[in-house]
Length: 172
Image (cartoon, rainbow, N blue to C red; front, side, top):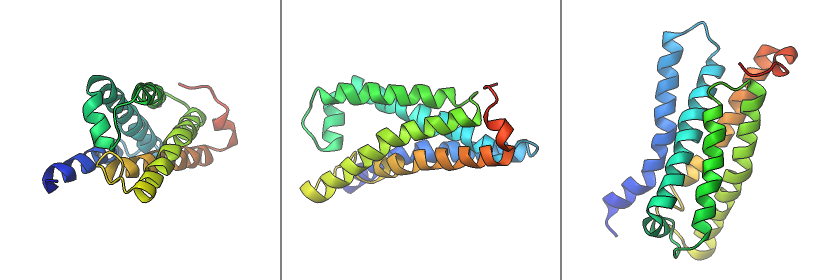
C-alpha cells in the first residue's frame, strides 16, 4: 500500500471539520457582538455536518465501487442506504444555518444516533477484522465522533447562555 494516497484518503474527511472551524474563527473576529457558540454552531452544522454528509451521499451514489474499497468492504446495496442516511444528515446540517438552538441540539442528537453507531461499527471492524481501510479508521472515525459531539456541546451552551425562555422561541 502506498503511504501517501492512504494518508490523503484517511485525512481528507478532516477538512469537513477544519474548514468550518476556520470559518467560525474568522466570523467571530468579524462579528464580535454575536455569541461565539451560535457562530460556531451554524458553521459546524452547515460545513461539517451538511457539506460533509452531502459529500458522503454523492460519493456513495457516484462511485460506489471506489467507496466500497475505501471502507474495506465488498460493494453492497447497503451503500445506497448509507448514501440516503447521509442525505438526511445533510438536510439537518443545512437547516442549522437558520435553526433555533433547540433545533440545532436536535440535529446534533440525530447526527449522534447515526454517526456514533457508525463509529462503533468502525471500531468493531478495526479490532475484530483488522479493517484499517482509509474509510474505516482515521479521519472518518474522528468525524463520526467529533461532529455530533461538537454540535451537541455548542447548542447546549447556546441554550444555557440565552436562558430558559430562549430555547422555546421559534426559529428565525
